[in-house]
Structure formats: structure tokens, C-alpha cells
Length: 172
Ligand code: CA
Image (cartoon, rainbow, N blue to C red; front, side):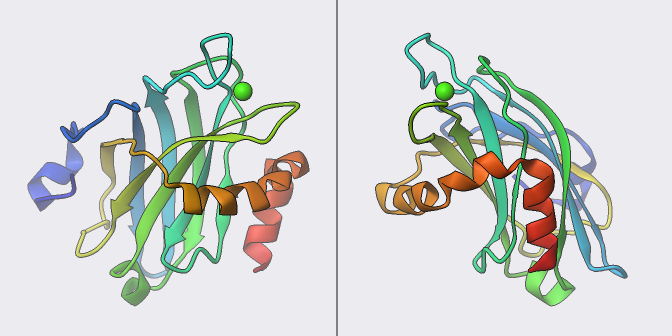
């Protein structure tokens, strides 16, 4: 994925296993303000999670390993190719950025049951020059059971809505 500085300005295709679909993001880092801006552009070919053969995807983003701030997108109803077009801003020092990974968790919203995890995309930010905008596609991998329990535990947050979540996140 993020290999050479030359490749960063172009849209890259990620050739890893993408049977669970892939997600398209752009990243840019403002070193003076210590702000990482993640634009979640879209996802493609997500796996169906509902009986109707579709899903209601939304994304939850955080920086690993600390998970201090979690930001959540809007839910997109009945689609396997959601056009998110949402921006998420993380406050992170240059030193921390070098040890961080961006985790994008894709979940399926369910009105009457717990949300199911569709998968995750993890992008390592180590040694990456993010002073210029980087646009990339990342394959979605299965999300393991142990972590899924954690998702369920905070699943109630979906009822709070995106704006409230953002405020919570900024106040941390
Ligand atoms: Ca659903």
C-alpha cells in the first residue's frame, strides 16, 4: 500500500485478499497542528449481512494502538457499495503518528438486533510521508471474534448519532 513517495499521489490498488470488499480513503497530515485528516470516500463489494442480500454499512475509525478516539460515519441503508464522503480528524503528534495504524471497522446496522461486523481495514501509518494527500484502496479483512465482543459492548453508541459521538471523541 503506502510504499514510495512517488506512488503516494496516485490512486493505488491494493492487491491483497479483498473477498470482503475494499475501502477507499484519503489521508493528509498537518504536522504543525498535529491533525490527521482521514477522508472516508467509499467502500466497494461489501458482503451482505441481511436476509435481503444487502447490508446497512457504517464505519468506525480509530488509531491503534491506543483507541483513545473513535469516530463513526453515518449509516448507509441497503447498499454494498456505500459512498461515505465523510471526513474524520484525529489529533496525533508526529511521534505518535509513526507508531499508529488507522483502523476502519465496517459494521452492518441492524434495527432490532446487535450490529454485525463486516470486517476491518488497517492501514499502517509508520514512516509514511503524509505531508501530501495520499489516496488509497485497502482490502477488508475478517474481524476476529474476541474483538467483536468489544464492538458489541459499545454498540449502543450508534443511537447517539454521529455529531454527539464526535463531540465525545473531541472531549476525550
Ligand atoms: Ca442490517
